Image (cartoon, rainbow over all chains, first blue to last red; front, side, top):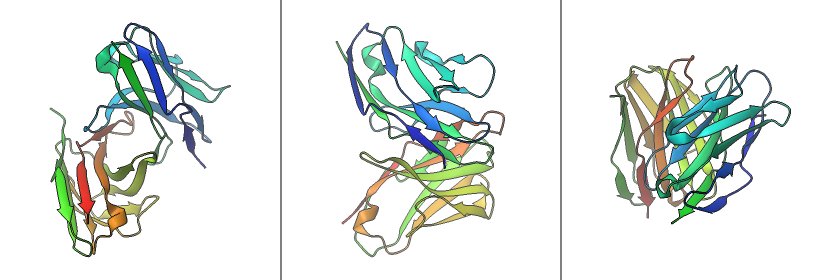
Length: 112
Length: 113
């Protein structure tokens, strides 16, 4: 059984702060891990993914994520957030089949 | 420009009416998906299509059916819509297996009264 857990439903920070959005997964076998962003009223947009190699992957707009096999985690981080980063962030896991499982999302609010 | 287009964006139907949600993609992707999104429930997979006339149930297929007669077009059909099918529906297509990236449409907000 594949599961994706995003422990924080809401995260609030101030502009310029750093942020970490947490993702833990449960999956047997080789996996792809991804993060997506959803602005209000829009569809999801791909941010970044990990499959193998360097466990730290860089995405767009200064986002990066780090894979940890020992912790079964793929946390998303940004060093200095901007108000436009306010959105819902989804972690996703997929395997060799075409099934992709999403977490419940973390709402990030960036205050000015 | 890679694009997934959903029509209509907003739809209001009465209980018992039939509903057709349409999705198109211009990337010749083989695999396409229909999800619904409800507050607090994240994205729930309704159906997957692996190519023309090759469809598979997702996690919540009951009350829905799909049609894929052309690779670029994937439809979601609700026969006799129910009020609990009020939701936002997203279509997505998947890049090739080496990319494993989903491209989402903007969604259709369906209200069943």
